[in-house]
Image (cartoon, rainbow over all chains, first blue to last red; front, top):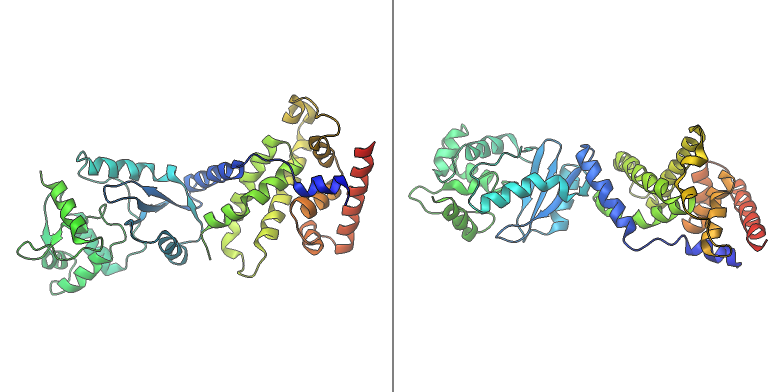
Length: 199
Length: 153
C-alpha cells in the first residue's frame, strides 16, 4: 500500500468531539423546526427526570427509576423514531419545573401533547389539571368529572398511567378521607408534592 | 426502530470525516447539518436490514455535490471559498494531500473518499455514485493514480 493510500485511509484529522458538537446543533435545529421530537434530562428534587416534547407540547415526563432506553424505545414505537436529544428545546419546561419546585410557580404554562393518553384517560387527566394548586379531589370526584361517576377504579388507573406526572397533577387526587391512595412515582413523592403545595 | 439520536451518534464521525475530506471546514459543517436533516426526514422509511452507514454516506455524498454546484453558481467562487483565506498547506504534509483530493474531478474525488474515508465496499461506492461497479473502480483507480503522481512530484 502506498503512502497516499495510508493517509487516505487514516482520513482527515478531525479534533475529537467535533462531530458530536455538530450533531448537537442538528438536534436543536430539528427540534426547533418541529421536524423531530426532543428529549432531555431535567433536574428535580427526585433526581433527573426525562422530559420529551414535540411541536405541540410536552408528551412525557419520566421519573429517574424509569430506564432511559425503555422510555425512548416506547416513544419511538408509540410516537416517532424522529427523536433527538435537544436540551434547549426543553428549556421552558426545565425553567417551569425549577420554579415549581422552588415554590415560585403554581401553574404550568407549557402546552401538553396528549397523544399518549386514550380518550377516557384524557378526560380524567383534564379533571386533574383543573384542580388548583394546593387543593385536592377524591378519585370518585375525578371520575364523576370525567363523566364516569361509578368509575373511580378506572379513574385511578388512568391517573396511575399519567405520562406527564407533576405537570399534570395527578398527585392532587386522594382517597376519600384523605388517604394518599396510589402514585406511580411512589407515595413518598406524592407526599412531597402535596407538602410542597401546602401554603 | 431506534431513536434518530442513536443513529446520529453512531454515524456522525463517519459523515464528518467524509465531508472534511471533500470540502473546506465551513462548507463541511453546513453539509453535516444538511446531511442529517435530510436523513431525519427519510429516517422512518429506512428498512431494518438496510446498511445505515452506506445510506447516510450516500446522502452526504449528494450534499457534497450540491455544495460544489452552489460554488459554481456564485459569481466569484474563489473569492468566497473560506479555504482561500488560510495559507496553503505545507508541501508533503497530509493537508497537502487532502487539498489535492478536493481538487480531483468530482467522480474520482467521490470514489476515493467513499472507498477510503467512508470505508465502503466497491459495490456500495458504485451504488452511491449511481454507476456500475466497474465504472466506480475505474474512477477510484484514476483518482489514486493522479494523487500518487501529484504527491510524488
